[in-house]
Length: 85
Image (cartoon, rainbow, N blue to C red; front, side):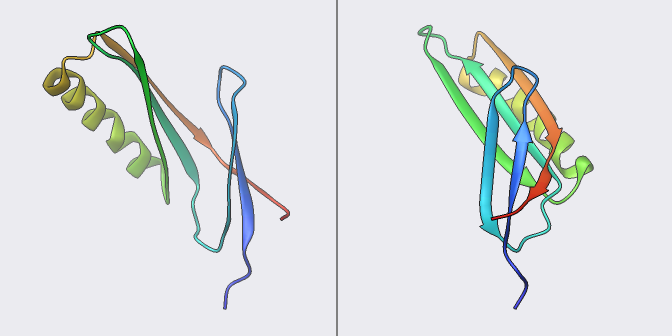
């Protein structure tokens, strides 16, 4: 069985997200902060096994914004760092 570890993502605004313990080979963390039509904010996030996979979420965010009527959204992708658990 693969050894489990923690992953840490630090976003441009200083937010730190810790993932784990996991044995999965995740490389990137993505986050969408959406401003809804009613003025509220909703956050969507996940982790992927490649930068290309994470960037694919950006296209999905644009579609979601149009379909759900978001006023605006911010999309971030950062590389995760493996940390001890």
